[in-house]
Image 1 (cartoon, rainbow, N blue to C red):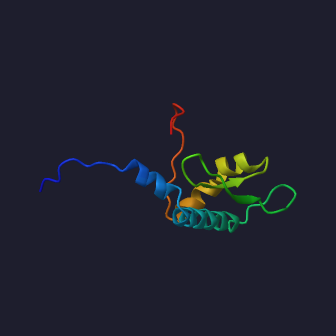
Image 2 (image 1 turned 135 degrees about the vertical axis):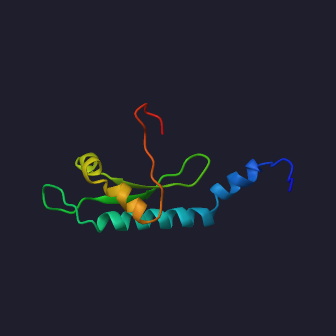
Image 3 (image 1 turned 60 degrees about the vertical axis):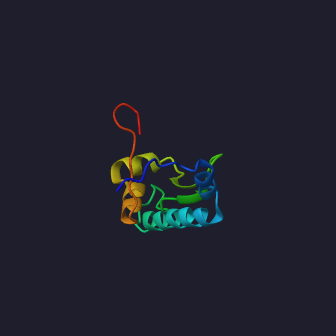
Length: 104
């Protein structure tokens, strides 16, 4: 079966990436990752729970949400335990990072 050429409607794709419906889905996924990360029970040296923040982080051409550990211990916690990576994977998301050449 020959379908000929496929043409991408870039304006249509951009409209979807900026839509309220898409933002709701992305936000829900981010909240799910944040909840899973908090549920790990990791604590900072003071004994307080590791602060996991979920916040709107749009780009100029699309909606966006970020899940972050905004604490000096965050980088170490992620490196040692993979707090955010594991939480994202538990939610069915695929997580990639920079390779040895610094490219993602």
